[in-house]
Length: 190
Image (cartoon, rainbow, N blue to C red):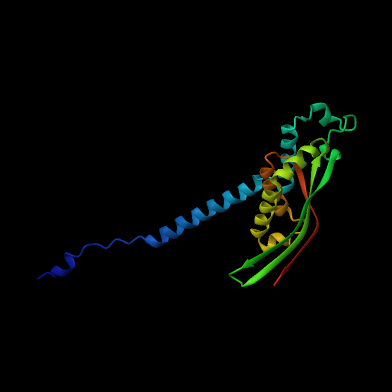
């Protein structure tokens, strides 16, 4: 008599691990994402390059186009830099008090704010500033209340300056302010 139990057993195939395939797929996806992030960060312009591009666009909007000859021989080209003909204007002194409910602390921010305008646009600026002064003050206060502590501790206050410049020019209705200046700036966290 033959043993029937041995002849009817199916052959067992080795199982592929579904978990290992998933881990390999996630690893490949992670490598692709990291490579894309590195490539994007290498292609994005720096803050200085962005500022230079912004200045060129502002000059183009004002009708001051650089010619090829001016770029090749700057010593012979006449000075058309608008920063040479700018004036400082007082935008006010501010005291902003903010409260952080998560930490239970408050922040007192005191500063004076000035801006620069082109000399030929000074009278237009003062007309628009007088009409929109309260809107401008509100935008400055809202901007300061929205800042993080790290923004307030930055050496040049770059983010704050850019936001105030953008919101102030929007409140004026025209991009008359060229730069924002903080001659006095202090804050105290309690």
